[in-house]
Image (cartoon, rainbow, N blue to C red; front, side, top):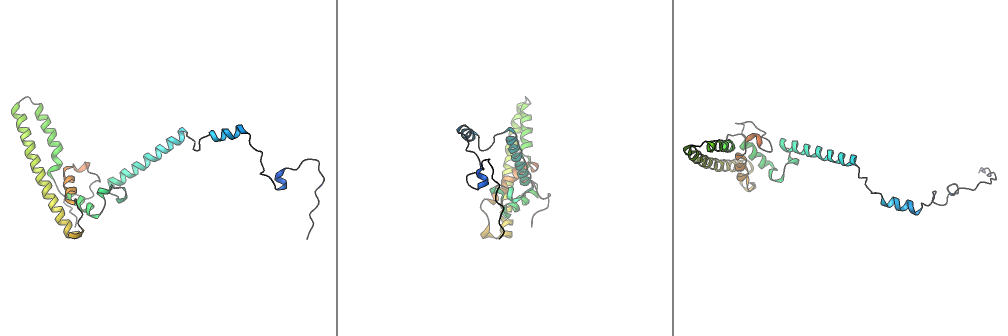
Length: 190
């Protein structure tokens, strides 16, 4: 065992950190303690708020793009699942009268601006006849989607509301549908 050299006698006081006892720092004053308690735990700066807002906007944009692309994790619950995807693809593959409801209504509004009662009356009659045809198309599409889904997924596993889901999609104009159409017209799912 080697002996350590004896410390030289010194008149300067020894710090508690050198001895190994104590906390190693001075006790804070009461004013310092109160000031420390008054500070917010999370700094509320303009930069932090702007960064959080930008992050949230980026997440929302990513979710919007994912939903439009039909990514399963970004879809709302009503659009999830293989049967819903099948119904969307079935509807998107065909032509439907319901896609023309909005343009037809615009034409009716324009026709009502013409001060001739003949045009106004018959434009409303034509609109109601068109709406009846659209409802017929919705019913036929609903039946066709349910029949095709039964063949593909089995009658016992068919989800409730699949026909209604498909029928409501026929009324939306193709470019406004969400999730966006993933198939071309005439490209029916198998």
